[in-house]
Image (cartoon, rainbow, N blue to C red):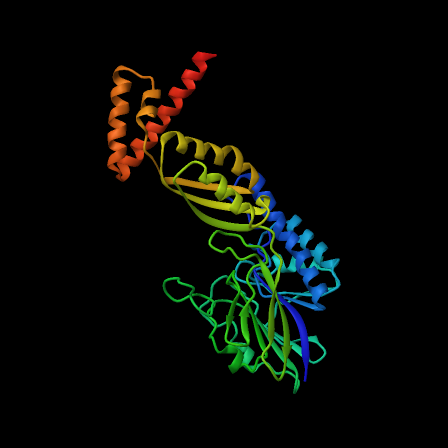
Length: 375
């Protein structure tokens, strides 16, 4: 029985710009993607896998920048494994382009896969790759695997980048791969890239997911797959964690301001806050003073503790008490405006949200003025 142990990974997207984030966050996230190479190498060393297969999108685009390419080659060159790098849709093949540069800089243990032809992976094991020559194609990139010849009894491992399902997209997805390709091509394992989360398709096909999560909506840590591939049985797949940052979405409902401390403590119990990007939605009905205190604490404390914080406070409704309105020491037109704002805020709806925000601002400015006058 032929057997091989490999690391299957994909969708590194080195050089991803993270353009919507502040520069400090962009730099940290970009560096974490390079650091993932070292963590993948550690997973290979710890599991005894000598081959790392990267199923496309090694780079985020066809011009990732010289530093990214050099850093990637340097890190891979120091790892005692063989890296098999295949172009995907983000970093597809172009004559004289990125992959020519990668090949020129690659250390001896890095293999660039730029042809759809069988390659000997190890003794008794062959790689059947499907590198992408275009970003989008309506052709099945794995079709040639069916006719790829390998020695009798050898393991056949497919490597491809594309969609087996449309993952909720409208219309037909590009780079479409039939779900039964492992069977029709006689593959012992089909290692896929494109989908950024782990997904098994049948018993011989899987997406590894990305080693470093890069968006909200996926709370699993980045990982690769340790695959033990055998000729007589289905492969044994084990996920190995490689990710640093966690992209969390949370909804916090408030009754009292004290609820914030409990929510933050629960979040802290999930892991290091410095490695968290948090998209937070607030809801509930609190006093005006409590709403001001909650939003101020998030801005002045939690935002400094996590890597990045996004707050949607539209659902946190302020209902000012009579005492709070009395603290807004205004007369004349401003007093009338405060009364109108309170009435409209109580009515709800889009106008009510705007009125509540305006009333909150008036409250904050009135308190600020009073403190200043008292000094």
